[in-house]
Image (cartoon, one colour):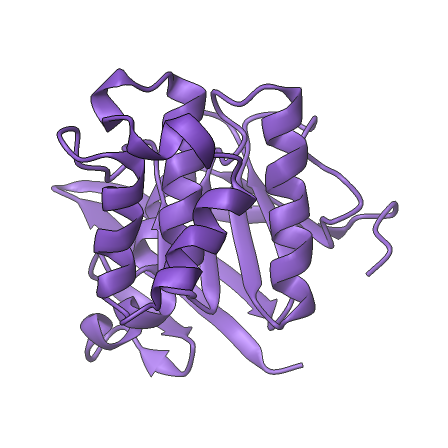
Length: 221
């Protein structure tokens, strides 16, 4: 399978602080890779680098065929980043938020509805303002906006955060469906409980570098 992410000795500074100190990582199309490591290891920074949101200081970074050292903006339309911040508009409803993000890629009305329904937000919730939602419902709404944008690379920072058992199972199903169509998923986790059969590899980041990259023995892929 073609490589979607190819980082070689990537260094990223946050101010003067080296958040990545020489990270090397390759991820192929259709893989589900979990990034783990202690606080401050550079996990979120790695996702933001791959999303084209942070400049690379040293080393090289190719994502979806784009050289991030030359023009990191080109990768952004094909990447979906779900971070700790929801990226939702508080004064818009669930449906209005999903429709807004869908309009960025000219999604059809039925695609907006399908994303809302898949995340269990249809019925009364679709017309509720985001500021009135619970943390779990906000997370589901964020996933609906990700779905409707149809990115080929998903970068998920603690994707199971704030979700109940049903919500976590829903996200796992979402990832499984996406990878069947060739989507690549890179997600951050602080624990191992989200390591399901969907995970092909587990990458450990410490001090801004990849120190371990192992195949998940329980993975069916």
